[in-house]
Image (cartoon, rainbow, N blue to C red; front, top):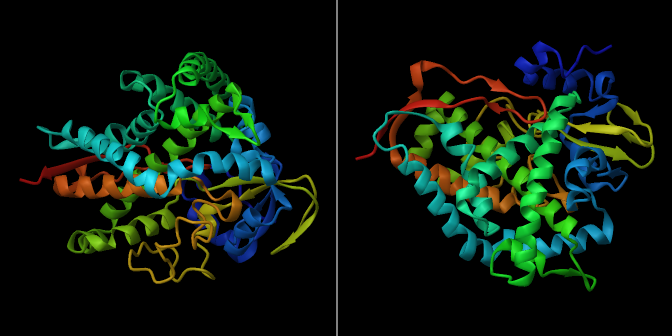
Amino acid sequence: MHNINFFSEDYQENPYYYYQQMHAHYPLFYHEPTDSYVISLFEDVERAFKDPIFTSQNYSWQVEPLHGVVMIQMEGREHAKTRNVVVPSFRGKELMEQTLPLIKQNAAALIAAFNGRDVVDLRNEFTNVFPIKVIVDMLGLPGEDLHLFHRWYSCFARHFENIANIQEILDIALAARDEFRLYMSKVIDERMEQPGTDLLSVVCTSAIDGVEMTKDRIMGFCASLLQAGGETTDKALANMFRNLLLNPDQLALLRQDKSLLDRAITESLRYSPPAHMIYRVTSEKVKVTGGEIPANATVVCMLGAANRDASKFENPDEFNILRKEIDPKTAYSGASGISSFGFGRHFCVGAQLAKMEMQVAVEALLDHMAEFEFADNKVPREIGIFTRYPENMSIRYKARQ
């Protein structure tokens, strides 16, 4: 009988110990507090993204109450057609030509605000704000309303992490949803009448099978982009700087050879993914390592555990930017060798955007900071079950002259 409870203090303090227990003894177990079946081995988690037996119907209760029907819960042809509307904006030429300048401008502006100080909270002053600023710019929304979008993002993110189903968190998220929809309704009307070249205009003027996107679908897309796009980069960046500071030898390697940046980012995403679990729902009973999952069951796919699977990665609990098992060239595609963005048809559509944001931000911060360390030698505590990240990132640094 296992003693793994996501809500216990021991688990929340150090889930990595429990990942080892899952791999060794409980590759499949039933988690009574959430009425779910938990899988943790890399091959099982990968299968849960690729095998259509594992559906994304979990989003009907995770996301739909806030944002309506969104792309991540669609299946088959509807999913493919909707995905094709937005994919060009997150990849290739459009990403490089339209979005890269926005990313660079926002990173530079936030770093400029550090001037004159030697201690900053890197999470609350940079990583938690930076991706929201980028998304607001991509959608062509007013920069002066950033504080509103940041507050809405925070409320949506807390709801998505609310696996304990705390009513107060849901109520706050629903209130934020209503404010967001009221705001966006007017903006969408304007873009439908006078579209520009921004991402919101693209979505407002797109059609699927000859049918234009509904206003509800457009608002759902914007809200899910704000939430998912913000959370991925926010937490991934904070985790990466924590990892580099805890592993000064790896930081030194990266400073000596900037060509290792993609490897460092990919390894940090493996070692400390922004999301540690994701749900799926079975359409029929299915066998996995360790037993059988019944039909219509909620499945918790442990992304954080899959990325620490010793059958897939050598010394998986070691942060190593020279790791041979990882290929940065495929890590941001459906054929990824890490679980952080999913796999196959449901691979995160914004993975390339997240990668670019991290590349720009890490390079800009390392160029700005000749030296940096945890302020007062205090290592920021990791928090979170669904997503995991340092609650703050107070650092002392010397600016490069």
